[in-house]
Image (cartoon, rainbow, N blue to C red; front, top):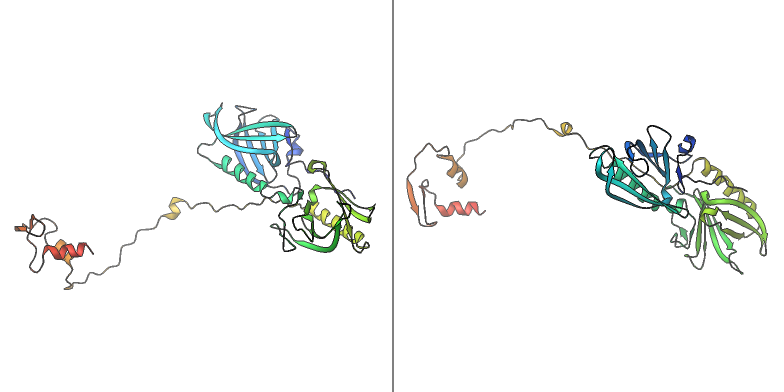
Amino acid sequence: MAMGQYIWQDREIRFDAQPRLLENRSGEFIIDSINSVEDTKGNNGMRGSLVVTNLRILWIAHKGKHNLSIGLKTVLNINIRKAKSKLRGPTQALYIMTQDANSRFEFIFTSLVKNSPRLFTTVQSVSRAYKTSSLYRDLKLRGSIIRDQQLILLPLEQVYNKIPDAWNLSSDQGNLGQFFITNVRLVWHANLAQNFNVSVPYMQMKHVRIRNSKFGKALVVETQPRCGGYILGFRLHPPERLETILKEICSLHKIFSVNPIFGVDFHEEESAPSLDALKVARVDDDVEIVDGDTNDAFAAYYAEGSNGSDNKEITFDNDIGLACEKLPDGWNMSSLWNVAGG
């Protein structure tokens, strides 16, 4: 059975595409949209909008038909460097180096909003999230995906069926293992070697069918050419289960096609409160002053003549070797130093 159309949005670069190709496909959603961005490399001096989705980066000119669709899979690296913008002059710009098939492309985008880091932070964080979630989208051979004979689940992934006694027919004698069928992918691993495994996302399946092999009837999974065009064969025991498993995989693929999970998720951070919201009204302290006879050295020193209106007798203090005002009766310099020292 054919498994659906090829998903190109995250894997290709397209220039001046038709407007319908810029619309979100199923499972694609906008993460951020920045209104004033210049395409400094190819359309220097032209203002446009930069839209970041979970699959690609779009730049759409405000006037004319110029646009770019840059799949996140094609991004090699992202840097921030100086560039010469016709609209802002020399300024910091976002450099994106990409590769599509055998061609490399460099894109330079300049934010026309002063002191706004959104262009840099959004693109870098989304690209990082895309690269770290490749198991949702790419075929993986011999990965660290099994622990203690159990599949290590991805976020939002659910196991629908676990099938023991599944033989991988890649070698002459086959390898015994087990299948995991989830809402995102089909996974097989060998019983004797957990690192001998394969993970095939639904979005990379081209055909799934039952065919005859030298081992008898087998479930054959053919992947998209862009991910290697692999043909994987599996034999189940008993063979009568093949039809049931094929129907289950096809049914889950249809559900995935309607609402695919591409693995890039995001959460909006709460905006910082404004300065006015942080202001606290001034409240007078409700304090009652009570007279007492407490022998507090600092209170005694600062209480008398603190306003400088009294003329105190000047005496020489041997403890500090300096002349100072005469202390009240019962006090000496040593007691003051003891209080100051804690």
